[in-house]
Each structure stands twice: as C-alpha cells, then as structure tokens.
Image 1 (tube, rainbow, N blue to C red):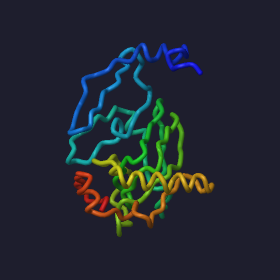
Image 2 (cartoon, one colour):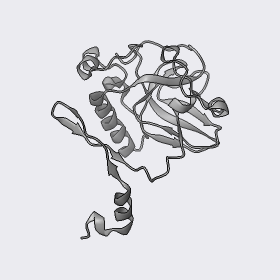
Image 3 (spheres, rainbow, N blue to C red):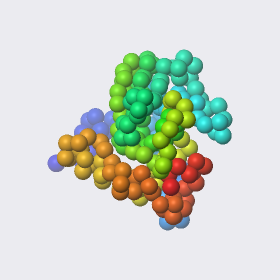
Image 4 (cartoon, rainbow, N blue to C red):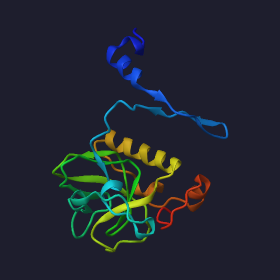
Amino acid sequence: MPTLNEVPEVAKLLATILTGEPVTHGALAVIPLLAPNLDDPDWLTLEDLIPPSPRRGEGRVRGEAAARIRVTEVSEAGSVPFLQVENGADRPLLLLDGEELIGAKQNRILNTTVLVAAHTEVTIPVSCVEQGCWGYRGRQFRPGDASLYASLRAQKAAHVSQSVRAGRGHRADQGQGVGAPRRSGLADAGAVLATAAQE
C-alpha cells in the first residue's frame, strides 16, 4: 500500500503546505496548516453578503451581490425545518453546518453544510433554536453571532445522520435538545449568545 507521499497528486499538495505557529490553550495545541500557493475558494459566505445585526457593525457586504442573496421562510406560513435560499449572485454560496440564522419567524441553525450554486434557489434543512417564538420580525434572515456549541452540535449531527439513513433527509429531532438546549450547557461551553436564542 503506497504512503501519501507516493501518490503524485497528494505529494504535490503536501509540498505546498506550510505550518504556522502553534496556538496553545492548556494541554491543547493547534498547528495551522497554510496553503499560500493555492487559490482562494471562489465562493461567498453569509458573512460576506448579508449585513449582520446592528450590534456587530456594518459587516463586509459586497455591493450588488448582497442584494442578490435572500434567505427567507419557505412560504408565508413558514416551516420550522426548512428555509429558502435564493442565490442570484455570480458565485456559489457556502452555508456551514451549525451556522445561526436570525430573523423572519424564528431563529434557526443549519443542519448540514450546503453549497448553493450561482443563480439557484434551494430549500435548506434547519433546526429551531428559539423556543416559543413564531412571528415575523422581518422577512429575511441574517447571520447570527454564534454557532452551535460542540456537545449540542454532536447531538444534532447524530439525529441528522439517523434521518439521512432512514431516507428522511437532513432533519434533526426538534424534541431532543436542538430546539430547547439547556442554558447550563451553553455556560459550560463558555458560549455567550447576546440573543439568548439557544437556551
């Protein structure tokens, strides 16, 4: 069996990777792997496009592209486990698993990572992270300040994996912690959510 260095494509890639200075915290050390000779990915993210909440400042909205991206409820009535994404930009849009979306009828988090092609409209799977709220506070979603903390993300991932294996798509079990995580779990994880939506 060949080693990674003996596979030409992998050997070529490994030759371009540099290591950064280690970052440590207690017994944990993370060594960044950098690929300065590779092109940057040609996709956009919600942070690039949609203005964040006012408490976060103006963000990095990229001109006309921002006006061409819309994340909304799937219909006027809405549907807790799904949102609609319209990518009218000329580049793909990358949505990350666990990313928080704030607005419309209820704050949500993404159940899986989705790459939305340019000039495409898709329905994406999400989970509720806000109890007792179901009323419009605006028509579009914007990126939140937080992502799901690790233990709850693991629970959600397990539920989503089970759902995919059962042929139900990327659905999370709203009754098993994703829709109503414990405040103590957030505190244990050291997360601070200004909206307290994930409690």
